[in-house]
Length: 481
Image (cartoon, rainbow, N blue to C red; front, side, top):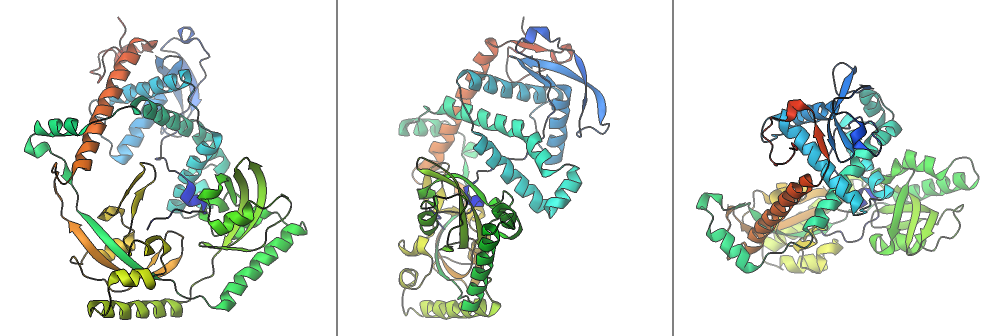
């Protein structure tokens, strides 16, 4: 479902892939002062023997590549089944060297990444690790580090990854392709090289939010009032209570803190209260949003953005209410199958889902990063519960009632109708123009990046250990004549 207004920090964060963290040494500003075979004693957790003699084996610009960098990337590749496209002893240092080229250019172009962006990416990574480990304490025990130590260790690597991404985006920002470019490219492709388009579906949905007894709502409100009292009388801090009790998994570990956010990115009810706060020492009244009930404390305001902390509590939905909601939707589904009214009418007048009500229940597949919006989903892009319900349906059929957690983090009951299904097939210019355009666009971008790297190598100081000079590299020019 299309979630345009968000408040939970876990929905605000943009993820980055997990990465190995490399140990670094400072070379200063003059690469000529550092022999390529210099050895330094460092400690690392990536090698079985924690103490060994490390080496600077490449220098790109004024940035070193250590032997430990290569070994750690090799270990990560083995763990994740990565194919480096050739001899790892050659391709791994070359890939690291290409990263250094992007970082070097990012510094020249004054490309910046804010500390808030780095912190958000690290936090999402740590949240993923905590979920896999089972708890914060188990993660710390497994890695033999505190969360703070992990954040410090991840900082430079995550910042560099974001700088590289921004640099690549800048380089390809002006790449465009015309319809003629797309047609001409695919005319020359052999049949078995034409991209395969996965099965896509369109899905309509009707939801019912189970009713929560007023006594359960009042219990949550009383708990929030108690938190407010404890903060006001100074017996405990807002941040400590958020870590213990907030049900926003993204911000709870940060003491409830949400980074500087504009009004449009927040739930309207939450924003109305948060932006009216003026005293950082006071706690807001209880606010009901689409996510649950909150109390808010101001941290700072900058122009049209606010930084605050909050505690979210969600009243639990009783199983009896869930059962009642499922029964009601099963009855509605029976009426729909009997043609007593249409699914579109049910979605418009009965459904509790505000995001799809105006589109007659049609779910929207929104890619905020790419700025795209479509009604078509690949099965893997649907919410898990919806995909499971749709899988066995024929076009026009309606599912049995089921439960799911919606984009607001709430448990709801739902029925879905399979509106259309386009089976997987080789792309056709008449039906899949956008897919084919994206293929050509990506190819043009890759060509531009490849040529940029080739030219950048020519103009960059590069030194490598003799053991790498006979490598079969992807790019020419690494070995200076």
